[in-house]
Length: 190
Image (cartoon, rainbow, N blue to C red; front, side, top):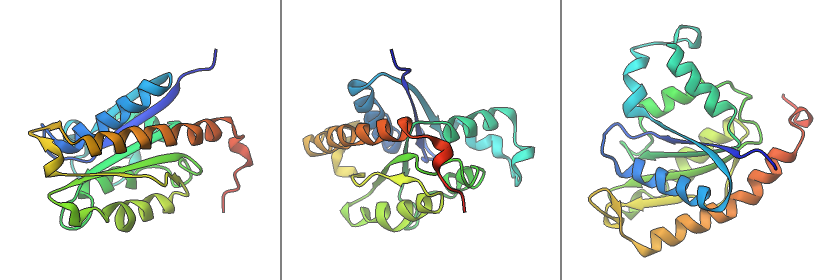
């Protein structure tokens, strides 16, 4: 029997409770409904204070190093952030500043974001996709954006959003399987 996929979901929200965290968890659950997964959820609200101004990876607390290794060894990353001043949160970027430049080469990444309205939906294309292109990740074609109107409090209520989450999870899994089966040594690092 094959090992479960290692799925790591990262919520870049700075608040708890959080619509972003609810969205990221819903996507992760949809993936888990379709495949055998070992799921880890990383919330910046929990680990953010541990950064405490750290600027170098070798000076990070061991708990952060564990989370970084989880990100770097995932078979699928699900990343989500609220729109904050037309971009992702600074702490979300700070976390990924510590990720090894070549650890995510060819890794499937499912992009997600939340914002106050539909006009912020392009964050997926203009902010998140370029960040993970730097890492040479395989950003999945279908991202998931949710606005405030898709929630009742912190619970997803929009049937259209639920459908998009399910479709994103369904379309992600064949690419995860491909990435897991390929020989990672065959990827050239430039």
